[in-house]
Image 1 (spheres, rainbow, N blue to C red):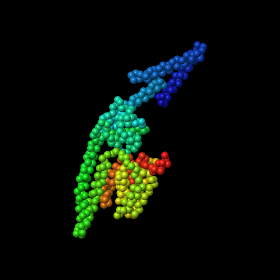
Image 2 (image 1 turned 45 degrees about the horizontal axis):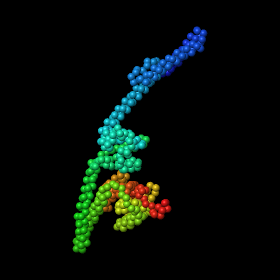
Image 3 (image 1 turned 180 degrees about the horizontal axis):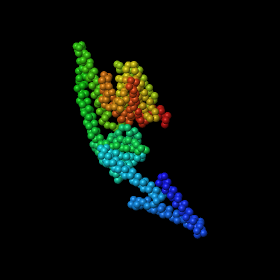
Image 4 (image 1 turned 90 degrees about the vertical axis):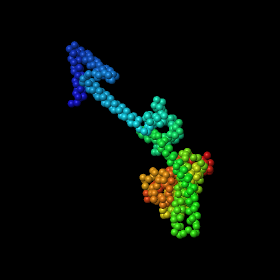
Length: 440
């Protein structure tokens, strides 16, 4: 039999003994019910005394010993003591874990800020305090947007798309750059990771300047070389065995000229990340022009179709928009065989404007898709060189879309084909005059 069960049987026996004793004593004195009442009153006083001792100990258990009681009261006190010890053990373990967490986060080279569902600061480590200038006494409980007064941070938190970090310049820092990335967890809580990327940004700036300067310096001598090669190729006295090498040199010179032109364009786009304004661009006319360019190539897919589902125009920088769309169509034409097809589509919906180029070309392996917009990145370097690809086209597309607040979506299946879609926000869409008048 369990000790608790024995205690309850003992308590029941004690109560029964009290009742019998009271009835017996009352019967001896001629009042059995009076004796029972007195016995029950004494028993109740004993119970209240035990309750008082238990309550007093619960209020002073931090320094007082538990009362020495037997029976059910002893079992109750023993259970409380065990619960208290278990609670104290878990509390000590939790405190140790918190201290270990604080020590580990303090050792991190990155800043860590915990935000609640209202984007209020719950906790941050020492590195976050140093990088963001946070003060534990004043900034806990403050909304992060009120402390980081950067429009890019506000847009980033409002977008709820935290797949890629953003880079900002902290207030008061002329040469410093911080990378911010949010990781959602729990019930609407956010983990903000802060990293100092000043060195990487400076190296990137040096690299961009070098590429831009080298491209400028190479353009002039390459133009002279191309001119002499063209003159040499048109010379009727050129020996037959030299005509092939000269033609190949001209082709390579044209390829180098195209690469330098793309490098200069990319360097210009990378000078600033500011969103551009612009004027309405007639996408229907631009799409028609792109189709003619494809059909004018010496080698092109047999089927090039166009679908313009809206006469709405796109607000932006027309040369940049033309460059981005042309690169997408040019890529599709390069990697689609003669018997393949290219479909160019423009449509508008509640999410904004969309320009898509779909081909039935060689397709792209899934593992390469995330890196396609890196400069000079090629899925198949040998094939890219044979088709004249420089690996800069999609990098130019990415920067043009960033400057227009747009995104690039890539879907591809190896051996089936690819679809490149540019998604522009509704603010970039200009309705036709008649549609705007009807709406008004």
